[in-house]
Image 1 (cartoon, helix red, strand yellow):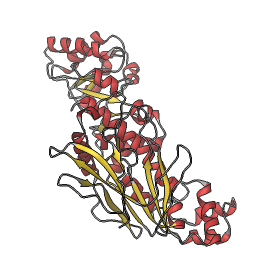
Image 2 (image 1 turned 30 degrees about the vertical axis):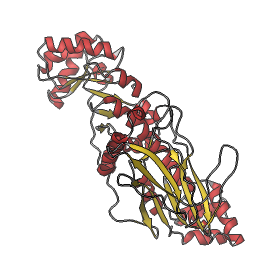
Image 3 (image 1 turned 135 degrees about the vertical axis):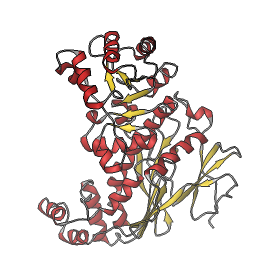
Image 4 (image 1 turned 45 degrees about the vertical axis):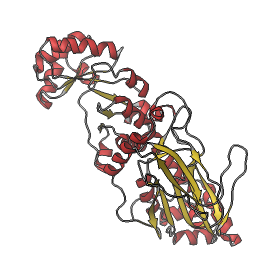
Length: 432
């Protein structure tokens, strides 16, 4: 077993478990669903992130001696529950949307089937991963779309928790970012990493020229020189003098980057450095990137906005009990309703491939007819508590994001606020 994820949960998950085991209801067969009641304000689609991490985390949700000792010392649960947890390994089934799949309000993103005791303890773990990663990948997908094919480097590690930084880099790469500055994400997930020098390196030296000479000597003329520590015009001239017209790139990290990029392009061309690329960074988000689309910018560096979900740091997903022993159950609290019964979903499309509707229907009902261009959305993820063979790779999921965005109606790709790109419909069904 790897590092246990068992205590990455809430106290009340285990007190619910203890009470259910005590009352004899813990062994009832249940279905839980993770879904979002609505998209974050202003968003027209969401992208599922974190599915692969959820599968791994469930596999590592085991209570070892250290975890059990903590529960006992702090009297979280009684000895009978501790004995039950000592043998715990999730033995149920999990189905869900493949990572990188688009989702909409009501989409059954994850379905967990098992005993109440088996499944209820996974709630916090599942939601913490899905809510974080889906928020990041959804924001990053908007940025990648605004960049219109120009590469983006994720560089937000210093703006979030150290472990969230690793997951954020993965989510951004999933959405279409080209590289990350985070080395741990590179080691853990195989994501390409990139980076050169910050302003501190320039300030360390007695002159900007000395700094550039040291960087070029260490990294070669193909490096990216940061030219805005002092005067950008002088910095660009010095950069070309030091590296020659084969300089790889310059980076601008402050000011009105659109205006500065135009001026920089003109200056570089005039100096003969026509192939030197221009990289811009500094508090960029999807709106700023879209505004720069017509400017001579070759790549973007994005930090704070991507690791914070660009204003939507959580996807707002919930994990609700929808079925007990084959009987639909539903929550009717105001503004927190849930629809009873295990649900499946398909997405309908025009013959051209454009998505039309998200159809969410009861598994125990009569299934809607699957048209030639329609697609079922859930796939098996775990069976008997074990990961299913052949799950999508990270590269598979990157392709899925691209394909999903291409399938959206044009208005669904707008950055302006509006209704979800496609509606979620719930057909009236009779029991099968």
